[in-house]
Amino acid sequence: MTNYIRACAISDITDNEPLAVELAGEPVAIVRVTGGDVYAIRDVCSHAEVPLSEGEVDDCTIECWLHGSRF
Image 1: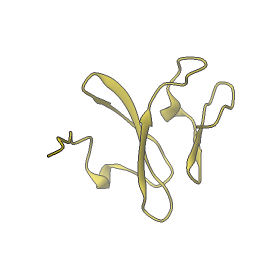
Image 2: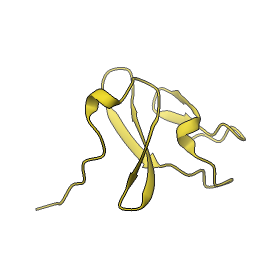
Image 3: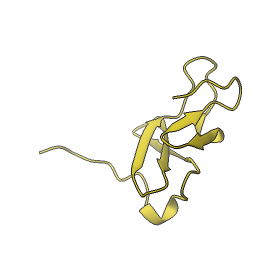
Image 4: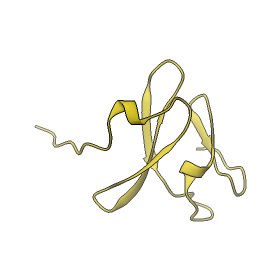
């Protein structure tokens, strides 16, 4: 059986607006896209070490606010 860690309530997530949480000491950005699918990604840009949760969401991608890389 897989162990899960509760990140937040689904009602805490606004469509297309990243929510920053910490899980087991790791920063995580959670996003619910239009249509209801929920995704999670490590909340750190691999290029500049800034929070992705401060970026823009477009469909199923999140854009780094600092330099525009898309994940």
